[in-house]
Image (tube, rainbow, N blue to C red; front, top):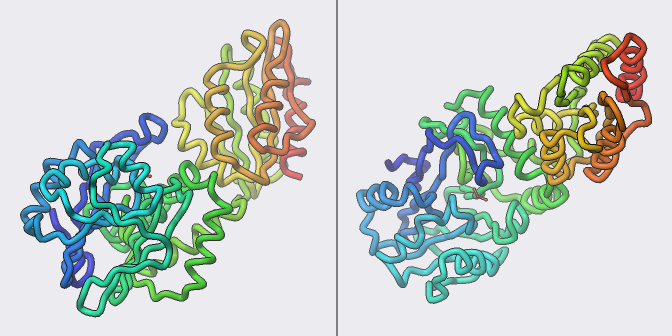
Length: 395
Ligand code: FEO
């Protein structure tokens, strides 16, 4: 269904209420999502991005109700990932010679995925522009590694709309479409989750790109990303947030994360949380069992934290696989400037803490010396070690 964005620009995407995961199962979706595509009808008719393949039929049917597909002068493919390009092959069957504007890496990803090197690609780089009539033009801005090497944004002069693709998006279904109409709690919860779990590894590039875009001093009335809300009320508030989030972001929060076999390591986790709150009542303390809480939601809390404590019992001379898998994802997200402490129970050999320490160090955390390494079930003196761990994390 078409929805008006501004003047001759419409939203023609898919609100995906049923979606429950993304990137395979690597990203949990709690409040739906959307794949936003846009139709510009100036003297030139332009389609910006498409939607994911399962929604192709609806997408093309709806688009055909808005515009004769043969009148589309060109397509902009801001990013080749399948959630934005999945309907492109079916569309190109109907309008095979239509030019596709994308980056050089965009050609690589689209040809690699769909095997149509004969498509009429028009390679663009930062600063290139196309006149779309009525005194307006589209200006392309490469967004390399935000979050793929092929990513770019497209700026529409005259209406001052930045089609930012994945940047500034959220996995969040909003029928009302605009940021001022959305549930504000969920909007910010989903925005920070998206940044923490998708963009954080590229934070140094985010900072540079935001500085570069702000230096252009372009008037921005609307930021129209490819997921979630369209930012029309104070649109640059999300740019300012990205700038803040890109600089080793942290709040006065400590997060305790663990898994447990027979509740021993769980008792240690609770004792560390208790000591943290006694020592620093103003600090926000969160506690999660990695097997019982969604990993992406825990990562968002890690992103917001200045320190974490991570616990696992020793098993098979190592740690529980739930904690091991979680650590793989933690390393991928490249958090910086955060402290960590380790804790865990063991019955026989006790390698768990050493493994946790090594893997947290590899993930970029500053691991403090204080730890709790508890033989069998925790006694009072083991729980007392939690004071030392809390003090090292808070200092
Ligand atoms: Fe929304 Fe990188 O795809």
